[in-house]
Length: 467
Image (cartoon, rainbow, N blue to C red):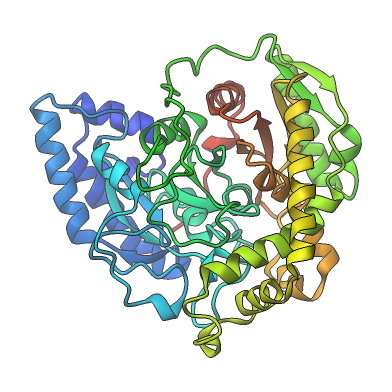
């Protein structure tokens, strides 16, 4: 196969061919490095390319595979990681110029597990400052490959852009308020936010410790299943990582949706949602129904308080995470992250405890909802593919920020797993996405549902035209 035909291939299809010795890991890696060199000056998705070590990893994978020593479904696949994941001996900046010289003495758990699975790490992907809302003023944000005038998502913007543009076969993102789901929707890729604790956070810069999730961003639900299977599981370095066994997420992925109960709160899904988003989600629901899912009307617990609480809650945890460098190096911070930290430092313990109590009540109410349904269907965001000009006003419009977070941050507050998939395109030619949400540790069902949806549609097979 010609290497110029590889870059849009799904990860699981690529490794199937690699393991059958139809494609070489070295060929695939060299093709990706050449494509990155050709396109990423314009897309700005990579914070750092690790070409030398990637080539060494590809050669090692090729030798093992030639000997018949196949580690699993990631073996030989070129992937990339968000630049808040520690990589041994390699700068890990988390989108912050003050950390540009930080070189960890070990890999973070996610990076270590990807390497143990035989993946080839191409490099580190750009993100917003400290994984919050905006990129640091000194950093050029990644460019949406579908339309440069439109938002590429935050904070895993580089992960979304690189995966959508064919610069890697899958990536790692993180999600504290929506940062796997926003760039997945904006760039037309599949993002899986696992249950909080399903994936170790050791060796990843914190934004907010009890809200942060690490997860895969890929071309398909099957690819997300393969990546999650490699990175999930207990970790002695992270006492908050779940001790539950990790299932084989690919094993039952083709079982379909017949009889699966999908909850729909039509009022919550439509309130404040623009027509393009509403139509795209309705069309996705019709596909799920056609696949045999039982669509059930439900009433989602009132989320207004927990949405309003997300920013102060995140702010307190962020202030703790940055205690070593803020306020001592305050002048080196961008305005958005500095403003968040200031808000966290100003919040009283009295008010913070009220937030904790409301969060616990909401988490319990959502858990109870999943006693009656298997999945919940919601938009990824309330307005379709915002432009950069619109997003530039976000910091001055609290109501708009609350609206943007409406369908994402509640599931960080509960720790619920979600999968985001492309489901339509706007008139501007940019993707739209929707979410499925499951009960805690329900990633196997999310992957199965995502796979069924993607077998019946071709949105995830559409790619931006890049030259």
